[in-house]
Length: 253
Image 1 (cartoon, rainbow, N blue to C red):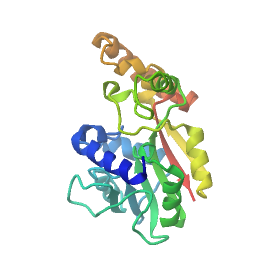
Image 2 (cartoon, rainbow, N blue to C red; image 1 turned 135 degrees about the vertical axis):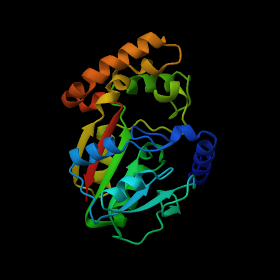
Image 3 (spheres, rainbow, N blue to C red; image 1 turned 180 degrees about the vertical axis):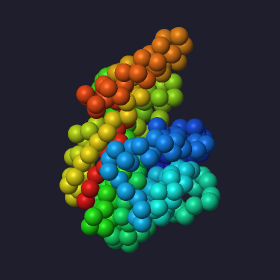
């Protein structure tokens, strides 16, 4: 499948499945402002006076937080799903912006869907200024969920790069098995030098026991596991960031 076909399929998929555009921050009907602020603070990201490009912006709710924190915002995605903010219809592999235009690039739960991650990271680097950064939210498969993903796809129960534990194990159009090592390798190859990650403690449960979201798991079991990891997840995430299904990254030029 060539890049054009994959982009077309992704566009069609998310038009038909709008609820699948969500992330730990939300994104379908709004955004969890408190979580965004806490994560940015934990990563040492300051937005006052900074120009931000949001690649794979979806419905663009991140624009509200960026503006509230004193930044300016431009979104970019392969399709327009909501109006009311500045945006470009563009492929992440070929951004229609001049060099060194932005202070920061946000890529929120979109990077795992890109067919050529190094090419996209090179584009992020190109449009960033010398002191720029990438704020990346991405699933993490260096855990039990990654083992289940590999087994399900190799055994033919799911097509390659489609299994994910969220959404009741509903197949994705393209879900690459990203790990922390993969993130560092890709962005180093694209010229980035600094890396800082915080894990999403709430999703340690999905990383270690992905059957929590399986449609045949009894609800009482799901609720008890959710309650346990709501309490224990943040502590476990500090000990082992790779346990969580999601990681949040600051990646510096």
